[in-house]
Image (tube, rainbow, N blue to C red; front, side, top):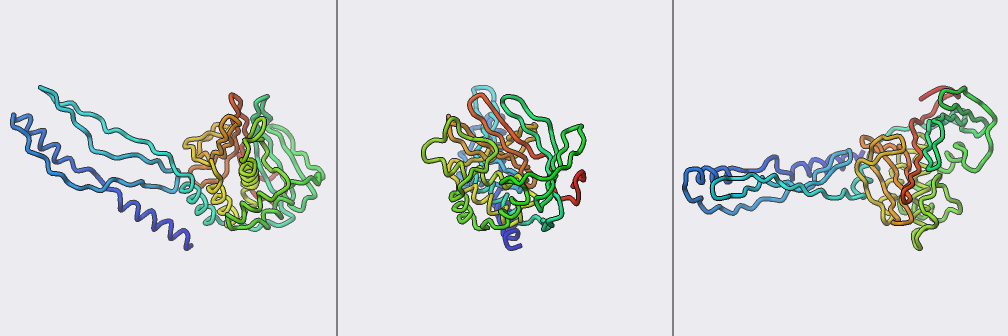
Amino acid sequence: MREIDHEFGLLKEMRAEVPEQHDLSGVERRMEEIRAGRRPAEPRHRSRPWPRLRWGLAVATACTLGAGAWQLTQNNVQEVQPAVAHQPVPAATVLERAALAAAATEVAEPRSDQWFYRKQTQHMSGGGLPTYESWHRLDGTRTAVREEGGELKVTDAERGPTHPGKTLREIRELPTDPDALLRHFRAMERELTPLSICAPRCPAGTEQDVKVFGAIGWYMSHGPLVPPDTAAAMYRALAKIPNVAIEENATDGDGRTGVGVVLDLGAAGKGVYILDARDYRYLGLKVVQGEETSAMSVLGAGIVDEPGRLP
C-alpha cells in the first residue's frame, strides 16, 4: 500500500504542476489594436513555468504545450498552429508503473491438483500454427491440449525441463529484488526465450542482456503463476537492461495494440514484449529480424480445477 500511496502522490503533484490553460489575453489585446489601426503597445514579459510532463497509469505521451503563435502581414493576420514536440517515453517510468500495477494485483496461490490454462497463437515467418489451448496439472502428471475447433486430448505429461509445475517452483524461488533477479538470470545455464532475438548471433557484449530479457519474458508469459512482488521485480529488472526502450502503440502477432518493451540490437534484430496498456498484463512477444517477423501471443491464461474449463 505504501508504493500505491506514493504513486498517487506523484500523480497529484504532477497534475498540480501543469497549467490548466494558457493566457492569450495579451495576444487578443494586441490584435484589437492592430485592427483599429493603432500601434500595439510593447508587450510585458511575464515569467511562466514551462509545462511539465503529465503521466497517467496507462502509457503516457509527452508533448510541448504552447500558446498559438501569430504572424503579421501587411494587411492581414495569419494564425499559425502550435507545434507539438513528441518526446520518447522513458522506459524506467513506464516499467515502474507496470511494477506498481503488478504489486497491487491479487493472485491466489495455486494448488498442486489444479491446472494452469493458457491459450496461445504462434506466427512464424514460415507460416503460423493454429490457435490452441493447453492445460497442465501443476503436479506435473497430466496435460491436455485442444486446437481451435478440435477435441480436448488429455494425456500423461512429458516430464520435460519446462512444464508449468516445474516453472511454478522456479518462480517461487526467484528473488524479488530487481538487481538480485538480474544476477540470477545472468547465472542461469540455459536459455528460456521461446524465440531467438539475434540473427545469426548477438552483438558482442549483449549476450547476457538478451539472456535476461528472454528469461523475464518466459516467466511473464505464465502470468497467473507469478506472485505480485516477483512480477514487480521483473518489470523493474527490465528497466535496468541496456538498450531497452518503450514503443507506443506496439502490436502483437494478433493485431492487439499495447505498450511495447523493446530490446533493440540493431541489425541483429529486436525483441518486443507487448503489454496491455491498461494493466500492463503480458500479451505476447514479437521478434523482428530484417524483413521477417515472428510472434507468439497469449490470448488467455488462468488457474482452473480441471482440463477443459476456462478461467
